Each structure stands twice: as C-alpha cells, then as structure tokens.
Length: 249
Image (cartoon, rainbow, N blue to C red):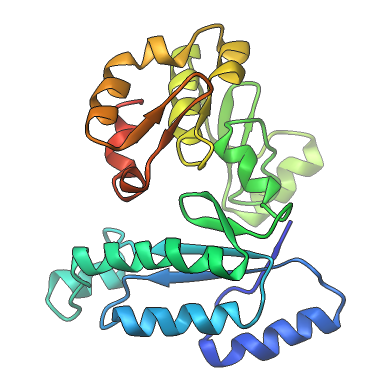
C-alpha cells in the first residue's frame, strides 16, 4: 500500500519525499486537491509538474468539496470565498487525465493513478465492495453484509476491547438488492468498470439485464461503454460520474 504524505504544503513536498526514500520507503503516494478558490488552470498545471518531478508511485487528485457546516462552506455562503468556475474545474480534471499518463501514472479509478502494480489494494476492496475490517476508534468496516462504524470515544473503545465487546457506534445490515446495487455503483468508479462475468458469479444475475434502462440511457448520451465483458464510464462519463452512478443505485 502506498505511503501518503498528507497535510503538507508544496515547499515541503521534496524534503518529505526525500526523507521517505532515505528511510527505505519505495511506494509513495501524493494527494492533491483541485478547484481551490483562486486556483487557475496554470497554477494547477504547475502543481502537477512539481508532483511529477518527485516521481511518486501513486497519485490521487480530488475536486474540492464544500461540506455543509464547515468553516469553508460558511465562508462560501457569505461570499468570503468564491468557488472556482465549474467549467474551469472540469478543465483541471481533464488536464489531469492528459498529463499523468505522460509521466507513467495510469488511471485506474476516477481519482486515482498509479505506476504498474502500484494500485492501492486497500481502496480497491472498497470499490469492489468486498469485506474489510475497521479497527480503532471512528474506523469503518464491512463484514458479513454489515457496514459499521466504531465509537469515536477512545475510552469507550478500550473498555469494549477489554471486555471482548464490539465497539460499534452504528451498524447497518445491507439487503441483497442494496448490496448488488452498491457493488455496481462502486465498480463504476474503476476504469475497468463492472465486470459482467464477475458480477454474474457473485450475484447470479447479469448487470446488463438489471440495469438495462440506465445502460441504454447513458450509452446514448455517450457516458457509458457497454460490451460483452464490461460496463464502464467513458471520458465524458468520468466528468458526470455521480449522475450516472445514481441511476445504478
């Protein structure tokens, strides 16, 4: 799994990477955010060049999200922060798609790129909707069809662990239909899309039949590719992924 250098400013990237390399780490991931207020297409390209110069094995890039209730969201609501124009943000994402393959980082998920065999196996389990353990306060897990979140209280977590009790604050059992639909939606995040044979083996049904209306609609709009092997987003579909995926949920 890549080691991520989080919470750093551009001027600390190089020494941070050099420290990791000197410590013997050979699988480094960089995370960048685009669509930041006052960011331009030129400044975003400069950030991409700076990141590529560090030769990371893995790279993630996410558009800035304004979460309701956060300080950044409130500043946007009051006009103290002006969001980047949506068309400019789309141009930033497309620049990402064009730039990274040229430096050896191939896209394998909407926001993730990697050198050969350096894809993040941990996150791929999320996108394939396979089981994973959540260990520690606030951790989330998915086991035996149950999605859960542990308590945020460290003392309560330790007490539960000592008593051999689950430390779950929330738990939700997914119905077979919901698990099927979520699996399809999450698989669409991968550039490989929904593998029809694997989906049939897992759920006993062909996704082409279950999601026929959604597939027909989005193929006609140029957002999906549908063939004998898979159902996957086109380049245009990557820009409107949430719109497509909602029709699968």
